[in-house]
Length: 248
Image (cartoon, rainbow, N blue to C red; front, side, top):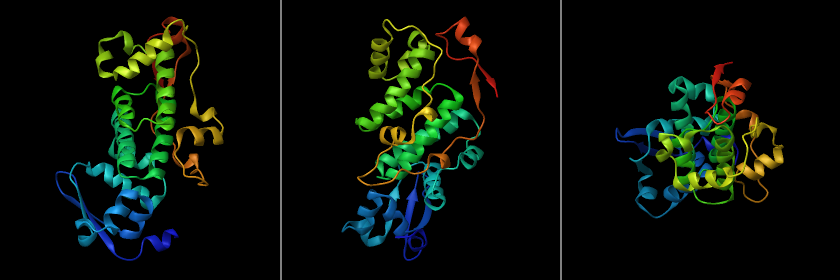
């Protein structure tokens, strides 16, 4: 089904969040993108009869980004950053999109949010504790294992949270993994840049695809907001300290 075909026909009413914000979205485009919405809107339950779904536990901004993604075909960080002007809030929103995409069965959005998150972290620094917590909330499979691998590798070489009062904010499984891998490892002046991975390795490791499905273009899901750079002197002076940064 083409995109032009998906935006015609009957619409579904999606009521979102505690303020009950209402979205009217073509049924075809919802069902084509999400296994959850397809099952709800085409099944024999109340939602299928009324063509109305209530998502009172979903943040309206998360759903608004989802709707924008449906029509634009990718996540635009420039638009997201206009709403979430602080970098921490931007990161929190992108990780919230990961959880939404997983919960609602939207694999392409899950892949796009993963790409955007990794590009953001490459340009800005270590993942927030909340980001790590949310990654651990996702299903335990190879895809999540690759994300965790990237996060704890960064923590080993550049983090200091394991030695700080913030340790309680990290998942216990993550702490154990970092401590196990840190034993006997010297700090190194390296980063696990996701952009250095080949297209095929990146897609097979950090995206979820069905058999025969093509990977969405990575270039469309990049972070173009404020960035920071790792100062080499920060590593020399204190290699275990969370990276000192300067505006690029």
